[in-house]
Length: 162
Image (cartoon, rainbow, N blue to C red; front, side):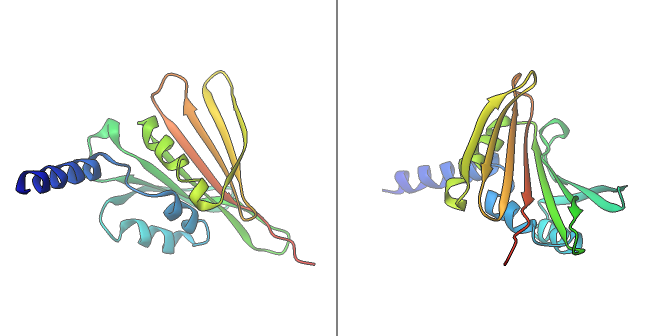
C-alpha cells in the first residue's frame, strides 16, 4: 500500500512539474481584466514574471514569461492586445506561446469544458490552425508544422443587446 501511495505521489509531482503553467479557463478569464489585474493574477504565484512592455497602437502590451525554466522552454503570455469598440470599450486579446506544442494541444483540449465549439480546422505553410468560438470568445490555435512552437489567441467578442 505504501508503495502504491509513493508511486502516485511521484507521478503527480512529475505531471505537475512538466505541465503547462496555466489553464485555458485562466486565459479566458484574463480577457475580461485590464493589464494591471491580469498581470497581478499571473505574478501572484511567482510562476510568471513581466519581461517587458511596449506601446502598440496606443495600447500597452506586456510580455510575461514563466520563471525557473530554461530559456528555450519558457512559455509566454502577452497581455494588452485588442481593439477599442465604437462605444469606447476595449475587447482584449490574450496570447499564449509555448515552445512545446503539446502544451498548446493540452490547453486546446480544455476548450470543450469552456463551452468553445471548433468551427475550423486547416493549415497554411507554417501552422496547423484550429478556430473555436463561443458567444463570448473567439480562440485561434496555431501549432507549427515543424513542432517548435504553439500559439493560442483568445479574443473577447462584442455582444449586441437590442
